[in-house]
Amino acid sequence: MRRSRIDTHNPLQPPEPYQYIQLAPGFVREVLEIYDNWDGREHIPSKLKELMMVLRIEVSRRY
Image: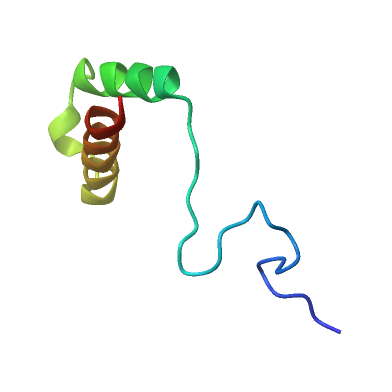
């Protein structure tokens, strides 16, 4: 019997397609600070830029 990617019996795991990663706000702020001070940021792949934008929005919205 194959197991699915998500354990449906685990109440702590959200149902698909809503799979979130919870990060500590201090950690996210530190990551954003490093990103802001990173030389050569303009050469970062667009997916990483998008991730940083989402993190910035979520931090400003929640904290």
